[in-house]
Length: 149
Image (cartoon, rainbow, N blue to C red; front, side, top):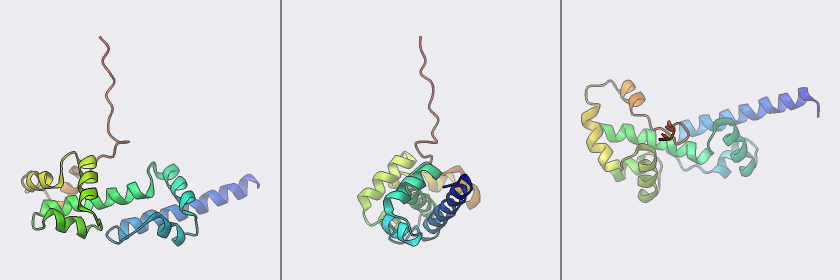
């Protein structure tokens, strides 16, 4: 394979990965799995997972869950839905998995977030509240250097 054709294949793969990411963004509340996403772009599930991680730094499942948690945060800030209703509204089928992942990404359980966020973002426009309250993935969190005495 020449470098020109390898480059062209790489660009085609990136375009397919963008389609997968866009589908996750659009359909995050629907049941999605890696196999279905892979079929949609004519890739194997394993190849899609590896390539997605290389391109975006996380697996398709992790990206999907982050999108769901971001949407859940917005719904919880509104305050008119229960945690269970929010869980199912964002496409999660297990309240336990939802709560665990929410706590991992946000740092507090959904019920605590709901109580705190309603007051903290009351005066903010929704677009500002979304940016300010965006969850920080582990790879984005700052790691402080250990202090050696």
